[in-house]
Length: 421
Image (cartoon, rainbow, N blue to C red; front, side, top):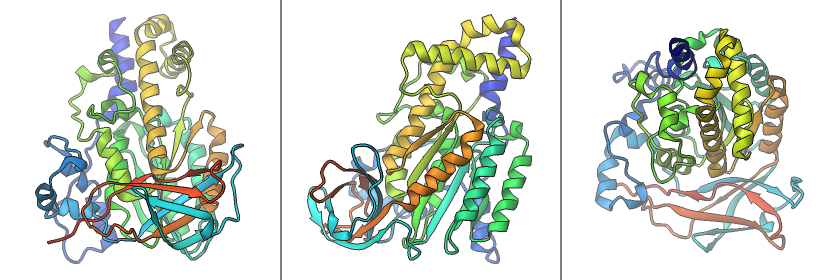
């Protein structure tokens, strides 16, 4: 009986951590195109987190920052402009989107100091092109959701404006397609993705997110967007730190395969948070699976039992279902709640929002809703009155003048560039 428990545990939790590691390739030949170079070296910025005690950038001394600025990895993530751009969504108390606002309707402060808006566009504006990265989880547990999600993503491609660009990344830290405006090429990659063997996919989704934020966005005159689809289960394997949004029990890690894998986390959630704030990217999280977030412990356990039952049916272990439920119900509830909490948090930190994809057929409407929200956001840019290029975190607050009851959803902090010496 214990043997079957271990097999199911292996299939469910451990397999996604095996497979090929993200490749860190040597310096490419000069003849290689920038696109091929980035595809080949994608994930190289994660090296900076290996074998290194996590340090919060807010606590680094100026001398430490200067040393780090000399490395190639920090060259990848440093922002080289003083213009601060924020895209925001404005809603009223009923949650309805407010359209038709003008530049003078907004009040922007940075660390409490009023700022002058220099760049402004409302809603769908062809003058502000978009760079969109779709990160998608195609590991075994996502198989029921993948076909409809790919169909929805292909429909999204058709809605892109001619000047928009899109890239495709998978949760095993692979850049499947670099930014392109070629819609036919993007659709071909979706077909190839559908044919990938899910059992060879190593799910390290937050590593993939950090790599995207560090490496993909290098043009300041474009709207930066990430659509992040995954269950967030990798969150429980991140390094524990002060920003961890949901701490799982050690027993959950044990039951989730801790003793069967040599996986060593590179990053903690503080690293994820910092990457979000440095990149100034808006993230829209899509969480496939049954919703656990926001429910009582009793409700989560009931849903955990159902998901274990469905998984047992998939793998043919219905005969030992009572034993599986008894052994794993608490770990399952813990794991899924941790993942969904982390997915929700990354969207919140970036000024985006999170959606639950409980039924595969809902994928198209969710992607359509995200694109509608993207089109209805206001793009606001300003040159900060604080001209120090000190790399220190700054708080941003945006309000609608004479309408403090409106909710303005957008990024709340950013890091300015460092002065080079």
